[in-house]
Image 1 (cartoon, rainbow, N blue to C red):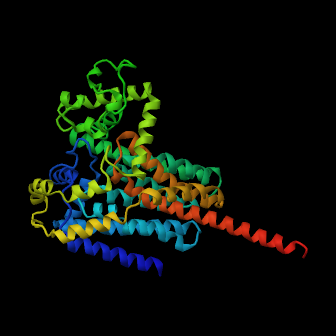
Image 2: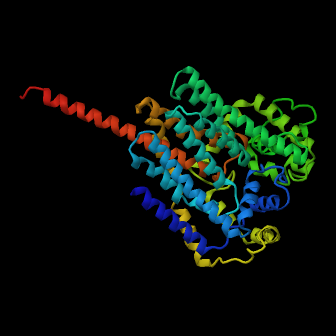
Image 3: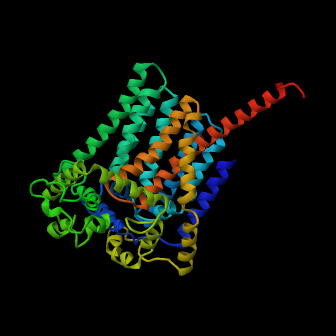
Length: 465
């Protein structure tokens, strides 16, 4: 009954979005690149993988109306919540615990805004949820189809977002040590998941090589890491690799700009030299990677400090690094970028010209987003429950809770290590973290209940005064 009511509410709120602001939020710059890639060549973008443009092409076969694509993405958001709900139920915990991650996926404002835009995040969140569900099934059932599906979901998610690969070093060893059966059966389960990840990743590399001639993942992907490194590297303390000294920032370390500034800004040494990621020659990526890796090797403490500092933005969003929930919302509403994307929309969605975006809808949707964020004390509470309850759970349920919790933590740390804070990176992690928190809180509550029962029994056993 509880999940039925939540699903009904999730459908209602998404219907409100689709009726209030039509056909989609198109102000975010990445949407332009995705649509152009879908309309011309899915491997067109040198900094984004081809998974999401390919998804747009597949949906386009069924309908060339933008509103249909947005409807599919909203359906994926509901499916994500249902998968997390069913994942928690599969652990043997009380079914109502699964309502927490489902509610987070169903009603989180940032997620709803991203579902209503042409952005890759909802697709990634769905594939991540599929991987989690399959991995949970693999922890409780010996059938190899579940690790097969878990590995396939991780590999396909890697086609959509680089950060998806962070699930592989979690799921593979977890199945090796916690899957049911003897050592041979656990090894087969772990190897099946690993093999599927490798096969699908290599399939991406082969497809891109066939289309562009480039053997790799993102042709200019090292710009993200360079932007992160440029915020702290001190070239007076080490000798940069030959031919890369020009990449050293000129500002003192205490007055460095944001990661995005060094990745895209005109004052960035890399941008001044290469003209930005979109214009850079092919060899630029290798130089940026060489410089960035050398900087990390020589200043590992500064690198870790930059990551930890960036992680604090997820708890207390503020300006200074990447997009906050508020700046994402403002960008999605941006009229300038909405105007710029119109030729691409006309090319790929010829029947979707024109907008319905009254000011009253913008105000009401903004209020909803502002009051449904997962941040601050709520996020801290989820983390404490998820981590603190782990030792108090039964062994197999503990493995499931580890999967939920570390999926969220690994994903966000991986994103911060390779780029910078962005509220979009946090959105797919909230559901799994809420699932881990639900199990952790239940473990804590169960332990406290047992302790109270022991105290009562001891009190009854004492002789009357």
